[in-house]
Image 1 (cartoon, rainbow, N blue to C red):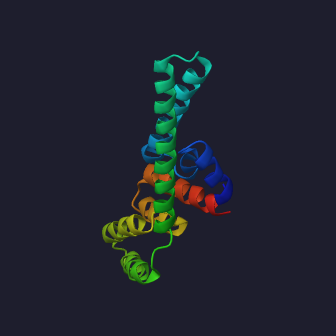
Image 2 (spheres, helix red, strand yellow):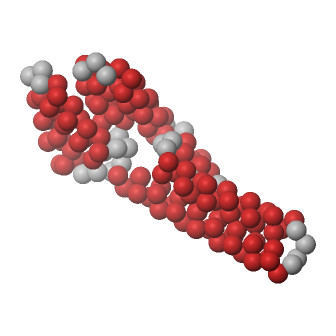
Image 3 (cartoon, one colour):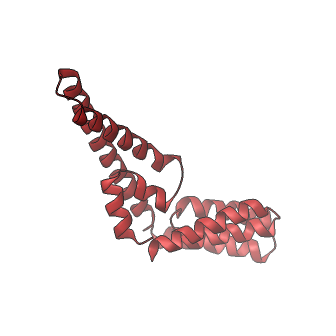
Length: 157
C-alpha cells in the first residue's frame, strides 16, 4: 500500500494504517483504543444530554485523540527505523555474506536475525532472513519472512 493513503487512514482511524503496513499487536493497540473512543463518543452523541453521557463523550473523544497520537508516534518510529545509517548495516550484511558463502548457516541465521532487528522495515533484510531460514529447512518461518518482505515492498510502492 502507498504510504500517503496509509498515513491518512492511520490518522482518521488510529492504528489502521499501521495494521495495513505491519499486522501485529503493536498497531492493534491504538486501533482498539481509537475504536473504543469512537464507540463511547457515538453513544454519548446519540443519547440525550445527561451529565453522565456528556462525560462519556469527553472520555471517548480523549481516548480517540490519545489513540491518534499513539498511532502517529508509532508511525514516526517505523519511518525512522526504515532510514537506518548504512554504515551500521553494511558491515553486518558483509558478515552475513561471509557466513553464508562459507556455508556456516547457523552463524548466517544469527547475523540475518540481527540485520532484521536493525532494519526491520527493509524488505531486503527480510528476504535474506527468509533465504537463510529456507536453507536451514525452516520452511514455515521462511515463508513468514518472505511474506513480510513482500508486505514491506508493497508499502513502498
